[in-house]
Image 1 (cartoon, helix red, strand yellow):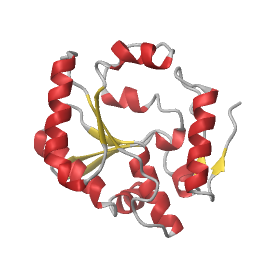
Image 2: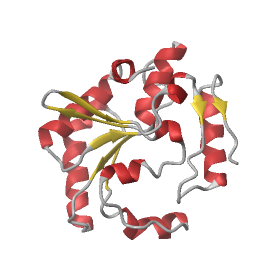
Image 3: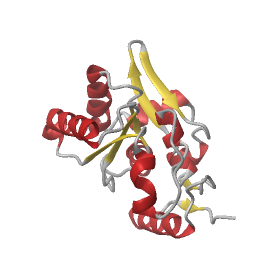
Image 4: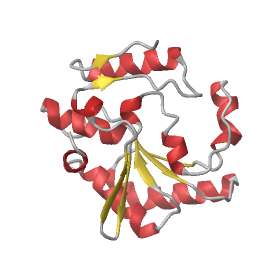
Length: 188
């Protein structure tokens, strides 16, 4: 699968399209729709399921140097208000402030990031290390591992600094119940 095919399949989900379009309108700094909602939309097309099957939420990353909770909360509320009509759970996070709360929540260190792509790079699985954003001339896609695992319905661990074998096993097991066709690669 190449980038254009990935985009075409991921954007068959109208919620993905609406979020990407709204992020572009809002002009949030370094804003991307990321992770599972993109991959799972593609899986749903490839396996003949309804487009939103198994999608728990839609993750939005942006990067704003204002690391106050108040600033992030204002963005979360504004985006949710503009997209409430979709009936989707949207998880919006300022990647500039993840290091402030992540260690307490997950018990793992989390050095500060310098951009949203850095946050995408820390996902548990390589197949979800994806981001899409609209530009004036089309789309930017971040996919450091390409699209072969997405097309092949393969879940592969990302042995990055935040890897947790227990969290990976739980996520892979949850996905496997929703998409039994998946091949789950065990961590090394």
